[in-house]
Image 1 (cartoon, rainbow, N blue to C red):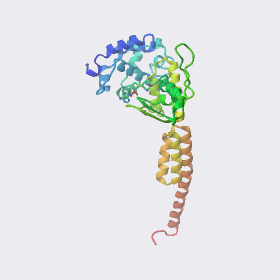
Image 2 (cartoon, rainbow, N blue to C red):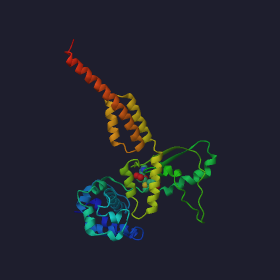
Image 3 (tube, helix red, strand yellow):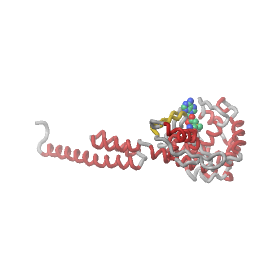
Image 4 (cartoon, helix red, strand yellow):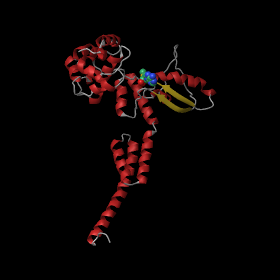
Length: 302
Ligand SMILES: C[S@@+](CC[C@H](N)C(=O)[O-])C[C@H]1O[C@@H](n2cnc3c(N)ncnc32)[C@H](O)[C@@H]1O
C-alpha cells in the first residue's frame, strides 16, 4: 500500500543517503538498508495526518527515532553499535534493522509524535557578537527574545565556551557582554531540557559520530539546567507545603517526592515530607489514643 504521507520516501532517503555519505557513515549504511526493512503500512499509520516539509525531514525523523530508541535501550538494542556512541558503520545489517523496527518497539510512538529539532549553540554568535559590540551603549540590561528557540539553549550561550574565530585567524571576541535581563524563547514545539526524555531526543537529533556537536549540546543542557529556577521553586514549594501541613499536603508531598528528578529539590521535598509525616503521625497517634480512651471508658455520645 502506498499513501500520500510516504509517497516519494525512498527518493528522499536516497537523496539524504548521498548527502550523509562522507558526513555520517553509520547513517549512510542505515539509509541503504531501510528500504528493505521498513514496514510501509505501519509507517503510513504512524504518520497519518502528519505533514512534512523539506526532502530531508522524513529520512532524518526515521534516523533520529531509531537513534533515540538505541540511546534509550542501550547496548542490547540491535542498532546500538551502529547509531549509538560507537557509531560503527560495520555494525549495520538488514536483520538488525528489521528487528529495530519490530511493532512493539517505542520507535513507532516517536515516529508519530516527534519532530527533528537540531539545536546548535554555535549559532549564538548571532546575538553574542552584536551584544558585545553595542553593549556599552545600553542603559538597561539587554533582553533576549529567540523565535524558533526549540529548547532555548542559545539563550544561555553566554555561559558556554567561546568557539568562534575570525576569517583571517584569531578568536572572535564576544566579551565583555552587557548585563542581561529577561530571556524569552518562542517555539511551535518547545522542548524542555529539564525533562530527561526531551534532553535525550535532542541528543538523538545529533548524528552518530558528531562528538564535538554532542559535546556542545551536553554543555548547553548542563548550563540551561544550572540556570533553571524551577527545581529551587519546587523545593521551596515543598517546604511551604510542609509548613501548611494536613493530610492533603502530605499526599501532595508524597506524589512530588515520587516524581522529582532534581536532587536538591528532592532533598527539600523529602525533608518537608519527613517533618510532616512526624506531625501527622503524632496527630494520628493522638486521635487513636483518644478513640481508645473513649472505647475503654464507655465512649459514645454523652
Ligand atoms: C532548526 S530548529 C533551531 C533551534 C535553535 N534556534 C537553534 O538554532 O539551535 C528550528 C525551530 O524553529 C521552530 N519553528 C519553526 N517554525 C516556527 C514558527 N512559525 N514559530 C515558532 N517556532 C517555529 C521549530 O519547532 C524548531 O524548534
